[in-house]
Image (cartoon, rainbow, N blue to C red; front, side, top):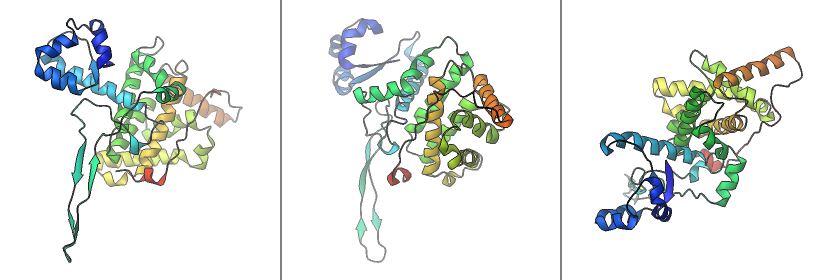
Length: 313
């Protein structure tokens, strides 16, 4: 999928397999001229073989997945309360919400209104690009497109985790966003048969446990608590146990885990490599030998949060 502006599409149409000019297409239909090309500035172009009837569902799914990956670029870059939601036109509408609250004793009332929905804009400008080049997203894209050393299964896991994290960033529902992040953590760090309450904190610790905050804030216990809440949500439907602080914890975890995995993709060409890395870090600690397994190039980014960031939902 390629995201392209109307001006670029006009000049590069042949590259995308469009034989007729955009001006010619606009002359053929008033709907194309006034609504499709007239109201939209950015287009998602996908080339595939087949009929529109058979391709519609898989192509739209691909577009939604890639837009979720684009939204992932905001992780660590923007606060959730200002998150933009790249989406197909009409699928995430911006509307005005209003309700009426009446005092049953006096008859006094209030009618607050607010704009809700995906009204923020994701500007792919110089500031955005500078951050991405320093962070994980700029290096993530070629990995998702294909990396010679990665196993097919690991690339699929990275793709799925990236989509899930992007969906989390664009969800305005705290429990749902939390669940997407937790599933992404499991995709990155666990395999079938693992005891997740042990595997998740142990493997996250291997990559992030060198940070002073890990012990100071008992992050391993926070991960266990988050997984128990995930189970209560999934198996018992207890949405109320998920608080904004739980969501922001998972934001920090997926941000730093993905950042370090991407930055050291040659060290982690498969999930088995991460598991082996975790075991070797644990062996060093058990034996009390000088740490040598963790590379000195591991990084940790701790976003700053304000009180309003803990009032999501």
